[in-house]
Length: 337
Ligand code: DAH
Image 1 (cartoon, rainbow, N blue to C red):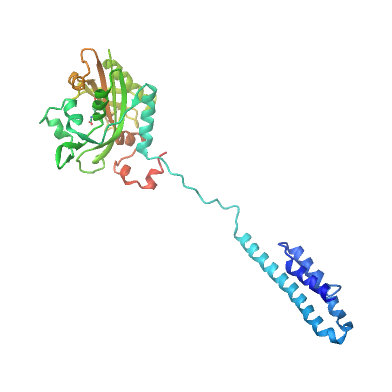
Image 2: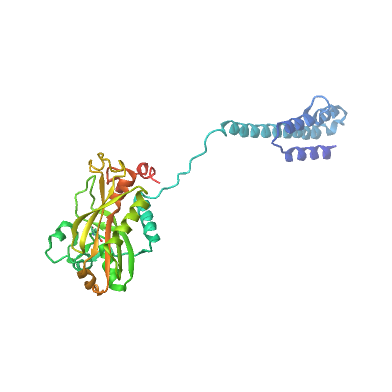
């Protein structure tokens, strides 16, 4: 008899379930007033010989406690799960996973690179810390030439021959020095000028330089290349116009405007009612520049161009303040994909 009860105790202690019905069944099996195991055993109590009553009673109470305890534990475990389920509203939107976005300048740079890649331009790079030769002299800036002042150069204090490049045109020189024509490259990169920071200027900004040198490269090639770029980048309906200009490293030189991306050329406050927006400088590579890099200017001609990425990104995305590109505020950055 005692052995039987011990068996029940261990059964009850090992019992488990997470279903209300099953736990209730378990309770009834042992505790039911009619025919429950524990109830019946208590009924048998009076038939137990007096000398065994004490031991029997103790062990029977143990069984009763074990069953009640088990039922309580399993029921309260159910309640916790239920409470958890009540808080779980499957109709709520999930936690959002914020994916980063590319910086607008990177978006514009990558798109420009892709367009020129399609025309066969390879990517080259030049150093940001440059010497006077590659940033100025080899590009036909004479010493003391006012154009050097125009560029508000940051010089290294201990060595005025070393400076932060003021344009990506240094990349042209470095490629020409080390390669024979045909050369067809673009040079994306950061440039530096000692300018007061405002909505339209910054001391650090980005440019892409282009250079094409071969036999018989003409101004018509330059114009067609830029027209292709403008249409690919700003849209098929885009027109360009070239205005005569001056750069020491190109002759003739021009500045290029595109028809206003906002009003299509009719005139609005973005294009200051001219219908045109300036996007880049360009020209035919000056023979002096070719000769400085040991390229035969009798045999080869070439064109070059340079554009500022911040300006182009401002036009493309309708951004009025260039400083936004440098503040890295995600509320701004995430709007541009
Ligand atoms: N380097 C010029 C600048 O920073 C831009 C430029 C103009 C580059 C004409 C060129 C060019 O290659 O041909 O303002």
